Image (cartoon, rainbow, N blue to C red; front, top):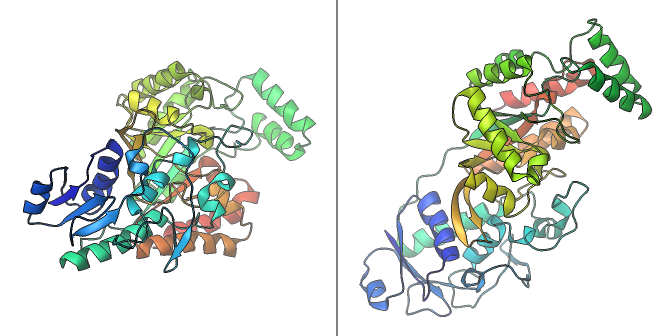
Length: 430
């Protein structure tokens, strides 16, 4: 067991130390403010405060973990043997920066509690992030810091190396619309077609007409066929389906549509399936509760995982609502506008609610790459380079690699065939 001495044991301190020692290093950790207890402890131990007590393993505290609430932080990023770090400390510390405070700042998404300029949907964009400003968005920086910390820690105590985690590829597939054109009321099809016409999306107008006349199959049909073709049931895959009332940003089939209900049930027979929380639920907490209950009733099993439609996360309210409704896992931690690590980690971590100053049971699963990011590369070679760059990096670190797709990834039209071919190759690369 590891013993941590700190003059005052705050919730933030307990949260971040438990994350690294118990969750990542798989060793028990305890805290004390009693000097005699600390001195008497015979196992690995460290002090965390303003000054060392003697010759023990000491990390100087920056102060963030002793604070409450949110305030402006002075952040100066420096280089530590090739890695950017901030919250620098005294020379007495075993590390040149307060690793625990810096990690808390990134994992808690502290900067997203502060005022920022949102995009048109109200999202925090990658360009507003500290990671973008200092060019480490592409790095799981917290995990790289942790690797160095572990090396210093085991050398100091002459401990064996901890057993590394196992690398795995996981897919998250969101389904905002089960069908592009079929099974929609006539009036809705007319208005959607008219919108496409006035936006000069003439190819879509023609495609819609051919589908409605029965000449072509819907481009998003046969999703289950693709699940079987790509053996998604043999890859760690989760589906998230939008199952809510029609809205401006939420445009799936009606929840009363029998085809919709049957398709969701069929998908859930193959892979774990959860709700894609609607955009409307962001401003209507009761709507979120209804969506979760409706989804659970349809599948006859509790909802344990969720993903936010459009990736609109509002801290701490989005995750606080998930927690209050008993959701255990979230798969929304990514940027919509850029690939990379939103929380600077590839490993799952508990959500810490800074508003309430407490750790929650909600486990956040970071996603670093999505279909949109891959498609932005335009050429198959560049798509493959982007995918393999993240996969290779995470495989070397024995870290999970989670990629987000949508059912439009499996669009049956000819213009999507090149992407499908590339996707098949990528999923076969291990």
